[in-house]
Amino acid sequence: QVQLVESGGGLVQAGGSLRLSCAASRSVGNISRMGWYRQAPGKQRELVAAQFSRGTTTYKDSVKGRFTISRDNAKNAVYLQMNSLKPEDTAVYYCNALQYGIAEYWGQGTQVTVSS
View 1: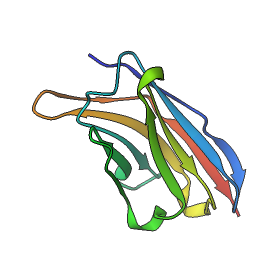
View 2: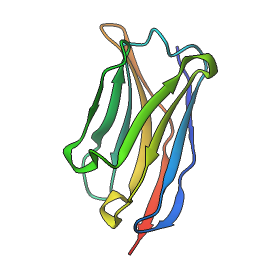
View 3: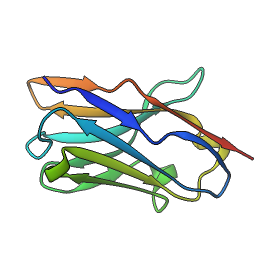
């Protein structure tokens, strides 16, 4: 079992930055993939960024160059640095832990609102 708790969401103007944090109840170093998803009203949840256990990362095309995912194994934490935010980035952001073939865990979500 892994409990995930997100923080760092809020209201920001377009062009601004936010840093989301995800605190895990245990080490994230050996979890297959840590990721951030988002869900806007009326839309499906989508993968925004993910980092695999060996360190490789993947990003949704629309956030490439603006968002950066990182993990701190010593702090059992994962972060999402979001720069140059746009109104279309407005959504609830969820932390996700995927252990291949075993289980998948979700946080409760944190709201990010970008005003124009």
